[in-house]
Image 1 (cartoon, rainbow, N blue to C red):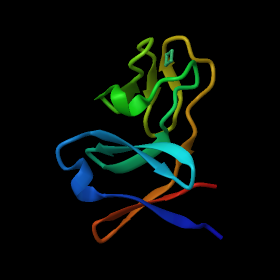
Image 2 (cartoon, rainbow, N blue to C red; image 1 turned 180 degrees about the vertical axis):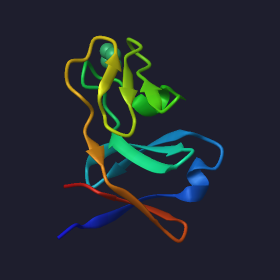
Image 3 (cartoon, rainbow, N blue to C red; image 1 turned 135 degrees about the vertical axis):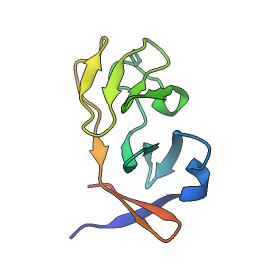
Length: 103
Ligand code: FES
């Protein structure tokens, strides 16, 4: 059974495209794209950098450290040095709450 955790309120993403949150001890980046909200690990798979401090462009997030690009919807590496994709998490919205499933 999926366990959903509250990660943020939609108002936190009203003027931003990505925020970093900690949910159950896991660092997660929550994104607002044209077609909804998405969540990935907030830590780059290359070295230690928070993706929530990077830029969101065309469905990708750019790592602030070495400018890798990850596809936000799939976690796939689109460009740059990382070899491993980002872990992604299911997201749903209930009222004004953004919920993520960690497993
Ligand atoms: S730490 Fe993200 S690309 Fe190097």
